[in-house]
Structure formats: structure tokens, C-alpha cells
Image (cartoon, rainbow, N blue to C red; front, side, top):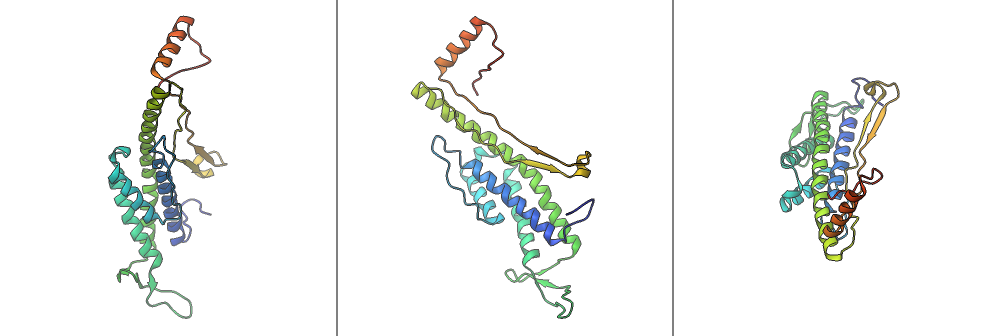
Length: 229
């Protein structure tokens, strides 16, 4: 547990930050899996590493850029760079590890052959970058959800016109939960904020017009609000 400016033993805190990025990327892949509506969502592999998930999102960005905001490409590039730094720090092998107490000051990443600076300050800096990328990624995920939802509604509108029936398409949202500890929340208990989405009804154009005309003739009905998204 951390408090104030204490850290969970350098590499432990970095691993937690990287895991959060991995979950966020899987969330983005889950959002994008619904973009083929009315076809069912495609399967998402939740067992990928953070970098593998980032590459998968990059592939979808290249294939369907209209589903992403303008900052998504740079964000993914920065994330992959930080993930590579994280991998070097975590998987580096000690070159001069003391056989008695286990301390070491020189480390080598076996895959790249590079010596790695594993000092506390470097680990803290990479962790801070990962945490900042997570906050920025929340915005990227929200932008993806907005564009995927617009595509879903457009598909539902075509179905409504073709079938003459009201459609209730799904709407997707990032699983965003913002936690604040007791100190940061200022309430002595802590606080968690969840983002909750809304349901959508898509009417055939003629049916929607008739319904709105009926409302106008009967006066406002505050018990129900009808809108075409």
C-alpha cells in the first residue's frame, strides 16, 4: 500500500502501471470489436502482453482510422516506447550480483544486449510516463467509443428503414473507473467514479415523424423523451 509520495518498491509500481495500460488496451480492442454491427462483436484475445495489445490496436488504426481521434497514433507510439523501456528494466540480468547479499549495480538486457540503467530515478521516470499515458489513453478510449457508437447507430438506422421496426442497438463505453484514495479525495474515505452509458432507440423515419407529430398535438409529455441519435 502506498501513501503520500511512497512507492511500491520501484519495479513493483512499474509493473502495476504497465498492467493498467494492458487492461486499457484490451478495453479499446473490445470497443472496436463492436464496429461491425449488426454483426456480432469479434473475439478479443485478453491474454496478450501490453505491447502485443498495442500492436493490435495499431493494426486497427491503420485499417479503420475513422474510428480513432487524431492523437491515437502518437499515443500508441509513445506507449510502445515506454513498454519497451519497461521490458528492459524488468528483464535485465544483474552482471555483478553479490553472492552474499544480492545487491548489484550493473544490468544487461539479454535480448538487446544493452546495459540497462536500473536506478531508482530511472524506474520512477518510466513509471510516471506509464501513468501519464494511462490518463491520456482514457481520452483516446472515449473517442473510440464515440465513433464506434456513431457507426452502430448508423447501421441501426439502416435496419430500421429496411424492416420498419424500432431498433435497440448496443452502445459501448470504456470500463473507466477513477479511484481516489482518502487523502486525494479529501473525504477521509476515498472515492470511486464510474462512467455509465445510455441506451438508444432508433426509429424508422416515418414512425419517428408520426410519433413527434403526435407529441406536438397532445402537448409536451415530460414522462418520455424521444430523440433520434
